[in-house]
Amino acid sequence: MSDNINFEKIVKIEKRKKLLKTVAISCVATLVVGSGGLYATHKFVGHKMQKEAEKQQRQFNIEDLIYSPNMISTSQYFSVTRATQSTLKSDREKNIDGYRVSYPEKSISFNMHGIESASSQTPNVVSKNGSSKEVIATNRQSQQKEPLFFNVKYEYAYQAAKNKNAMLTPSKATHEAQTLDHLSNNLSEVAITFDKRYSYDDIRQMIPDNVMINYYWLGIKSDKLDATHAPYIGLNASDDGTGKLTEGTEIKAGQNEFFGYQGLKQALKDQSGRQVIDNIDIAKDGQKLIAKNLKSATFAGVIVTGRTQNLAKLDNQHYTFATNVGVTTPIMPYQEPIK
Image (cartoon, rainbow, N blue to C red):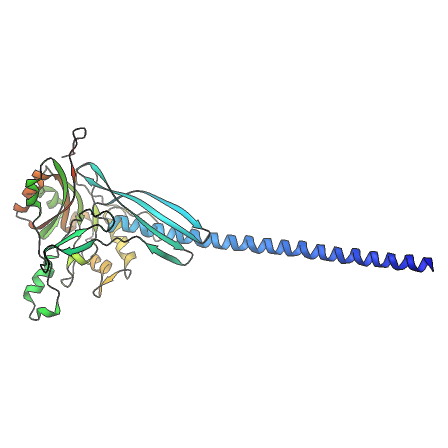
């Protein structure tokens, strides 16, 4: 009898051991599979976020080249909000005749599928005097004044139109440079809209030596778009006061680096279809104004910077259709302007 009881105990103990062993193996297997799944998920999310980060940085570089009139990006950096969200930021400044003036940062937040939010890059354009078509533009974040260009072709098209109701009244061309004559001991930036397109070489010869060429505006091909309602396409010049542009080289697909006139050409191709205003593809419109190379390139305007007394004389130049003032900053006794 005693032997039977002991045998039954031994059987129960062995069964319990097997059960515990099975449970332990199942737990370990679940842990291994779960860890593998978490690792695979982490790897997948990381790969997707890396690809999206590269895509957004490439777009930043394109916009820094072609949509940044006298706006210079000084740095780019990422900040990770969570595993599936990150923010790309760019610190920026303006070059006002050698003075570095802070400009609001540019930022976008994105996830694995694309952009979630972005800082506004569109200036606030309002009427100066109630119903007047003379406008003034300011930066939405800093309230700094933004320099404006004007589409000469749009004004001519409006004047020639039989049905003027079919078009918006064009913004009145301003002549703000002359007002700077009353502002002594200051530096400023001025957008000059030319009366017609001029070549790169002609522009460097006809702009006075006592002002600095900071930016070349490509212009707008269409006569159906007022320039104050479109992003400006162009190239920033060298920051040493010489007003030079570079030819650059053609950019291979997928590369991040865009520079020079050839970089502008490639970037506009990549931008096709991304921004449409009043049924006009802005990048495709810009492509129609692109020449084979810098030597044969023409531009519709420039942004120049310098001492206010020198800028005030620009309204009297034969090539000037309009002038519009941007940022102004005082001259300090401890820093000489470039010009």
